[in-house]
Amino acid sequence: MTEYMQYLAFWTPGPFELVIILIIAVLLFGRRLPEIARGLGKSLTEFKKGVHEVEETKDDLVSEVKELKDEVVEEVKGAAGLDESETMS
Image (cartoon, rainbow, N blue to C red; front, side, top):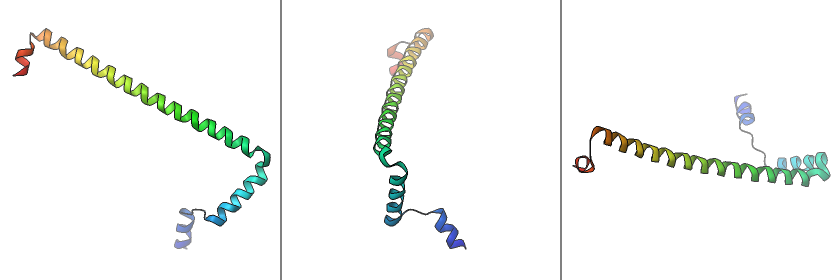
């Protein structure tokens, strides 16, 4: 019984099962299959564009935060009366 449950939990289709799935998909979707594949491709492309845009936005935010941090550090040094020669030693 345990072996059967492990088989069900980690089942991956082999070549025969993939052929059966493909035949069922062709029977169900028939002529619409190219349209479905095209739509899936467009969706994947849009998803990749969105991920790329998020990465760019993240990089921009990180650089802005670093710039703000540097400005705050300089202002604090100025307010404390520290100049560059005192901080270098």
